[in-house]
Image (cartoon, rainbow, N blue to C red; front, side, top):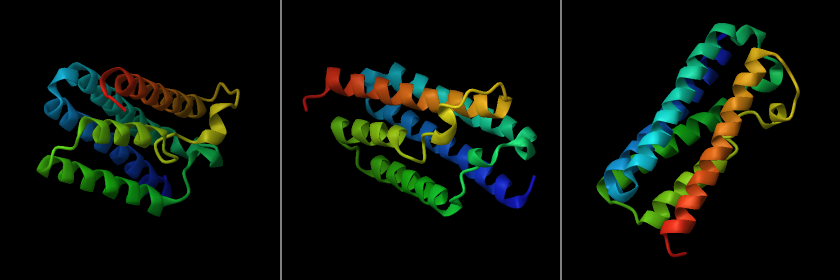
Length: 153
């Protein structure tokens, strides 16, 4: 695997783990929704594991799968890490925290490789990223339902 692909996949794994860490923080800070955030964190960890496996077949990736702006991916990871530290120091309102999670799941960086989500392929690498993308959209939908049912907007 070339260095750029490895670094991109490393950052993608880090992104999933950072989101999992954020959700674990929410699990501790918002106890009434503890099971929701615990499940979401586990799903993000599963995404990281899938991406770790993807490293084994990364040489076969179609060009569209590799996110080509490494600096943006690094920036998003840094922003999530800073938000986690900020939220540890000062617990945000439920609305602020949950809206942040919703926006994160919908962001261009968290949604995996949009060009591929509508392609019809039996290629395992494409199907892996289609699954991740579908899970991200599902997460966003579930967070929005939680916001709508529990938080006065």
